[in-house]
Length: 483
Image (cartoon, rainbow, N blue to C red; front, side):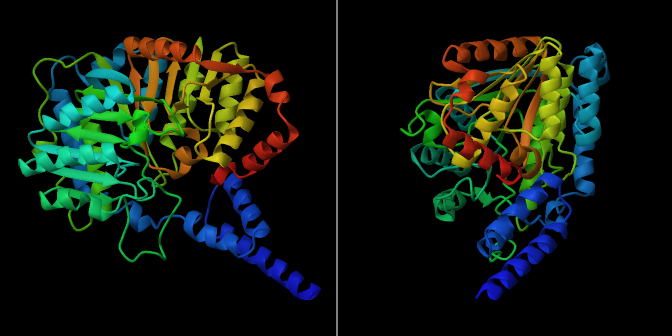
């Protein structure tokens, strides 16, 4: 009996090593998966088959080609033909430090500066969904929606019915949703939309693909584009809980942007690429002029921004690189809001360097979990960062889901990417990086208002936690690279 157990352990360990090392991955994730596969025999391999393997490159890059290049060329042409100074002139007006961030995204994400945008900040579900519904009802040509979560609850039905009405009126409607994030929402829910001429498909999901099913790589983006002229990006999904209707979370505190201007082109471009990677039998024409109408003669606004995406289709971790660069550029303040705080070593080092250089670094996280292991890991990293003088706040007025960063008086970021391994490496994400003093001050004012409804967590308060709680935090931290 002892010999049999020994053989099983040896074989399990051997197969674990072979399984993990046959695909290149960072060392932290490698050790985390070895830990899971060796400590949880058999079941660990089942978990790995769903959550550990990489997506086949042929699926990730299926949408890239000459049409995508031509689409981006067309966008650059439209932006340069638009009102006001050229893109190069707008870049030249920025401080040299901000210019370095623009250059970074141009190189690693092929994302030029989008100039002359009108940007509105929304921090409540009531505000966001009222503006969203108003924009959807006004659609005349096309509606493109991409959400991690599209629940079939009261709000989900309301949004779907608006889409049905517009599709019936002849508007082209396309909905892209994540099958795991929208758990419980079946194809039947979207059947009336399809009957009205609209389209809805799950992201990168194929029929009869249980063998290749990947649990780990999720479409966490939140993109809405109406008539190619109005765009939305941020942290809200579609569901009742985002209106504070779920007792478990109570008030839902999030941040979203409404954009008019050239930035909408890049939201549209990323939606089209994601759609064509998922709906292979019903691709959209990325060169169709209706998706990229000419800019109005009058400049919509004065905000310059870049729409940046990241995901497992690239090793560049573009949004994480942007976060790190923002932290490096901070001279006075770097204020972060995130529901999940599970940074890797590079972001931890950047935060510590900034704090120890005299920058006012603050991180705000929720006071409650929605994923227990993730929350315990968040608590662990919060306690460690507090030791370096970083101010940590627990938001007390419901659930904080905002993903924002404010640096000094001009730079900021709002989007879908959390401050964690999953958003950095595994999820498909989208953020707007903004170069605007007014937006930075507005987000800073929101942050200060949120502090009034938060409790500061000090080194002493973390040390007063029970040993059992600290053990759960440390144990969760070991799994951080794969949570």
